[in-house]
Amino acid sequence: MFLTTDPAIERVALGVINRTLPKSDWTHEGHFAAALWLCRYRPGLTRPEAIRTLIRRYNDATETPNTETSGYHHTITLASMRAAAHHLAGYPGEVPLQAVLSSLMASRLGSPDWLLAHWSREVLFSVVARRGWVDPDISPLPF
Image 1 (cartoon, rainbow, N blue to C red):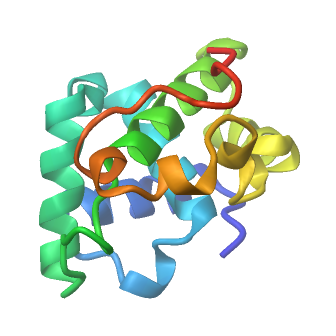
Image 2 (cartoon, rainbow, N blue to C red):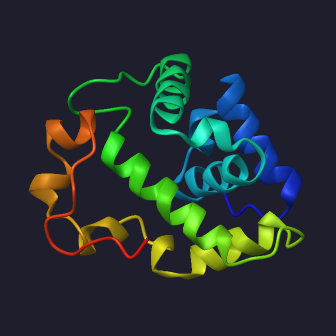
């Protein structure tokens, strides 16, 4: 997708909130764009149960089943929200989100498999981790 403007980032976040974002735009970059925007502008939606509800409803709207093997994943979501909030905290509020997102995507977080430095595949992709928070089994998160 390559989100290069703050309005494009806002479009992704509002599209998730309003359940109008095309499923094809819900990429790794899109997830972090929405997370950063929510952290900055709608922090109440970043609470664990609020983000769970938001994403599950978005998945329902895009006909993505929320099951034991697809759809919403609580551990991945919370780890990603923590990563986004930590990354955003390193920038003054006037820095455009586009610059923050670009920096985040250029970091190790830009790789979709960044979580595997902290969780084994078996633990991360377990039903238990999909349904609720599971602590990392390889290395603690640095944030």
